[in-house]
Image (tube, rainbow over all chains, first blue to last red; front, side, top):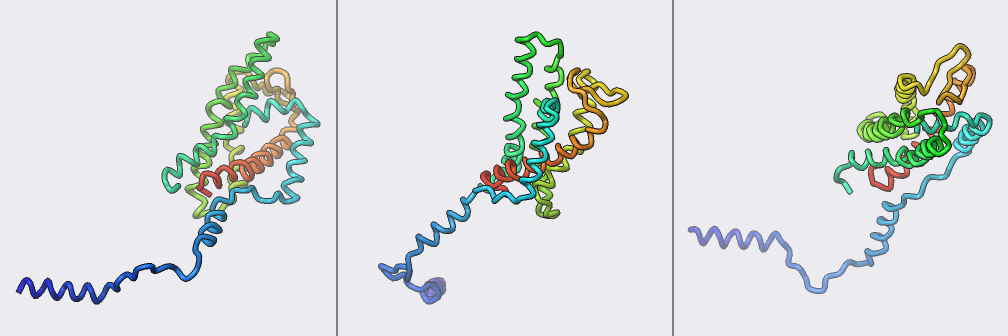
Length: 78
Length: 147
């Protein structure tokens, strides 16, 4: 009775899991796609600076140039 | 890189204030060498301890809240001076580095700032924080894999 169950289980497993063929390879080279994915994930370049951010930075630098005494105050808050 | 995201956020946050510390120490060295009678080192507790701590915690807070609020990191950073400025001013007043007068305030017993200039300087601080958080802290967050 127990052996019957084991045989049946073996048969079911063999039927459900297809055999692995030897020398089975993917239809195309997967390495370029993997490399592209890695490069996209590792792309840590800063984004392009928009013109209004440049203008804001220019305004701050201009104010500091006009009032250099404010430099220690700005450093105090950084 | 999915482990300890809050630790990485804290480290990315403290990066900028840590770079500024040597610049502040040069003021102390100048004072000691030239025997300037302004005890600037008394005011250093704020930029050396409070500012880096708050920057790190603020970046952790951004990591927690960004998924819900979708607030850009630059704007999140621009809010920080609203918290830092009163604390810094209070501490500086307590140690005698900020004196409030009739026509303006005097920082470090030398830098007089008229009241009319405080608003533009505050705006400049907001803009500076916005830019630093957007470009430097944002870049570090991307490098450390939390943005």
